[in-house]
Image 1 (cartoon, rainbow, N blue to C red):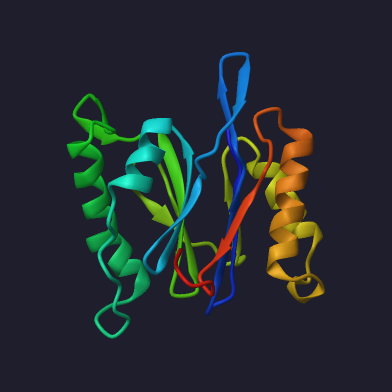
Image 2 (image 1 turned 180 degrees about the horizontal axis):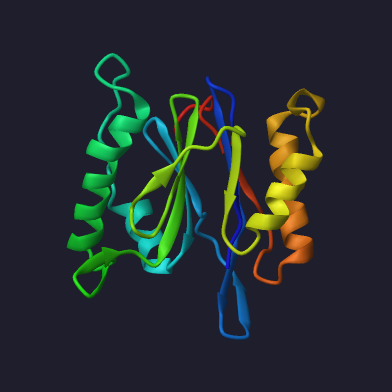
Length: 187
């Protein structure tokens, strides 16, 4: 159970995530963040722990060059293709009836844009300029909506409020929270 919440403004992306890991009736607070920076990308994962570990430690995204193609074409052609190969190589893919999938979802932010990746590796970019995934998704989306207009609060504050709302109302979401932005220099 998780909450990953993010905002994009066309130039910068901010993304935050919780630290809870739920197994049955047990909840653990984990050291490893669910939101990571990989070069020019922010990636937040919700779902299978192995998926998140492979993304964190083994996935080296291809570089996006804005002069060569649009961000959505890049996601479809390069980013997701490489991600699927890495997940397969590290045993994090699932197979049912000839269908390849992952027991996880992702938010990916880069080039000032935000994409939600589904378990079948399809993706959407909504028009709201904010998104959330995980068991706390509905609470985070409600908090984002309640903090409109967007200029009323800084993006970091809106993400903190979204994660706080998810933590308050979803038993599978808990702090501490990690919040990163594409403005920050890489670690």
